[in-house]
Length: 158
Length: 295
Image (cartoon, rainbow over all chains, first blue to last red; front, side, top):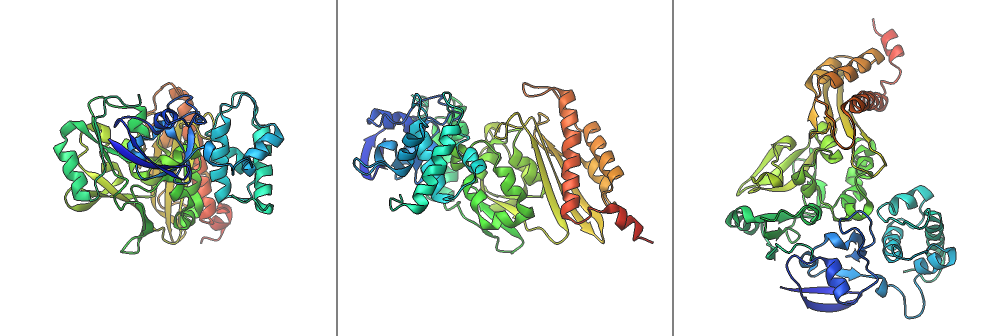
């Protein structure tokens, strides 16, 4: 069956199998920032923005996303200039192996768009569906705090 | 591949079209709401998925009669959490309960209708909604209203009806609800949950519901404990007695999450906490003064 997705702003008309997941479709189409972890919605490594909300793409059938706007990490920087959340993750050393990072960044973008001035507890709750097995989450929390400040004050508000 | 047995995903645009699809599909058709359970626990016999996302079932508003908040079955848990209407209900108890259901990523996908249809025995949503007396609107060719407990789980094979909205009665004055969940971590599935709903008349409990869930069976009311608090001011002795009764009259079993003995401790603690919090929000906190003020 055919589905039409708007991926990172560009319209894609694609053939999918009815039982194919959005994760499988995106990776097949070359969006390799989207990672497969558990495949059961527990680890959050596959998160993408679906109509602006961060969701586990392993649990979304591609057919169900027909007509939706999908954003992956490939679509969030502006040319060579990084998104403030990416920049903050870089500045704070919030990346170790990097497997959880794309989804963590997208989850943060969704979160900060609705809560621009969060407490540390709210930050921890916001990334509770994104497991990181390298760090103790301290660096990510710091990065998200810094990104929030930059996005509130800076000119590069996404 | 994700679900190799699925041969079709269809997206009806009206309720009648949706109903015709599920009826003509026999046992091979299944509703697709948020999709979490469909993808995580795919039943191989269900090869046609009926995607409900084009149906007008996403709004959250005060019902036509003005006595309930109506939540469209396709509203996501996040949308419900963010709704100002829901935030106001029961001093934010519903919103705080939702805040510890799964993860934010899953709450962006999960719908209230799907959650009720899936009927997981550990459901925090089912537990609190049962306590506050939620109703569901069902479409099966005609629209009717049913008790929450009447909804048949989608996996029971009796899925030829569609939950269209969930109705939460607007709390009247002197009414309170409280919910408690016990889990290994805040976002984990509950080892046990419980809830209460209390309505006062002349400073005494006139109506009450006490619910225990994840026992590990599905949430259900404990009528004997409810009866025990009627006519009281929720004094300490009453609360302790109701907690004991709830444990005595609830069938608690062991499963992978907790032993029956541990669940008994959790239920006693949970019922006590719920009642103490309900008492506080009903300003029955200082019961000794109330006792003194009475002739």
